[in-house]
Length: 501
Image 1: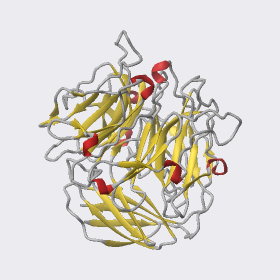
Image 2: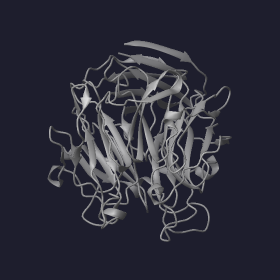
Image 3: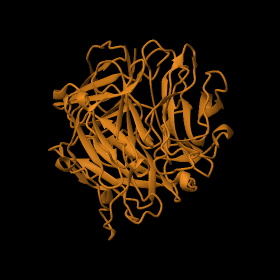
Image 4: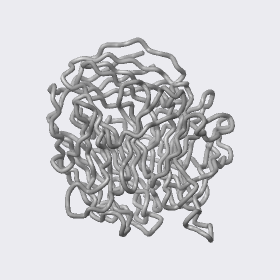
């Protein structure tokens, strides 16, 4: 591997500190529209001009989607500069992904209508792939996405999660559409394979949950429309994909599923998951002892329910959407951000529903700190991005709201040391999707899988951020997607480094 880095600054702290964010001025942008845009509203965070500062591409629903160029110098700052090919209406979300392996990130755009694969060109220019890949999308209501590289393929496998079949005359209840799976056939995509039953997917994630070298597809579904007979799903990605059964360790679980976040919080090498819902949000810990895909609920043990508004007088249940793990105070413990907001005017759910920031404590429990942190917006939040927008080593926050302006918050927390790690390898998978980063620092072990998907209708591509607390150095290695293990390397804190295979 080739190791390169840029020295930064930072201070170490042994104890948790109160996270602090400051909202920054942004060009006006609103996610809006009728019932087809009650869901969606995602944002993609990625660098499209090679300056190591991530741009934001935000869904607009009935409004045009918008690209915000990053102009952060001495503080977080964005300007609206949307190339015409990206100024699409009907957009529910987007995910950055280097589809063609040319080292420039492309965009997968989810829509009410045909989805789009947009080829990234220099300086944040984009053009449709047209027929170059053979990708054909139809008029569906797409609300979830994930991608992975399966062995031997020159293109990524793509999964699109659809919501209600709008053409079903007996809908919308019990009218959930199928998941669409595009597996490459040589250098092109064939027709989509339908994964049925579909239960109205609102989030999905390919993950190598048992470290066997194959990523399976987890799907979070909305029981509001599947009503009965549905559940969360995990597809075993064999030659002919099939659902895992309860006999194999999968546990039947039904909820108003909106978003998935995955992170190894316990340090055992296997991912925990955080599931957003209407009602309480679920934190599930992986159980390796069953030998199968078993996650056990630890929501109340960890204090992560976020089930009712934590400010104001509205005591009705919360509605969670995007969720993201990230160490916002750089103390070496991952925290959780949850975007929340009423679907529209649902009387059984809270109308003023503040976003949550759950700070992990020393004992592994979580505490609500969003009000003091300055991120407890009561807008109808949907998608979000937790990323370092100005390369100061602190995770900043962007939130897309329904019928309210998008928000960006700069992280000003006086936290601990940090490390930011870019990982790259040769095509066809230059992002090294499916790789695992292992980091040891301050007596803690961090295992991070590089994935594309999850959240609610949007995701981030870029360096992996680690909080290090008071540790001034860390040991780091990569398990590459083909299973090759790099040697351990010692690296200094407060740097952005690049690991190239």
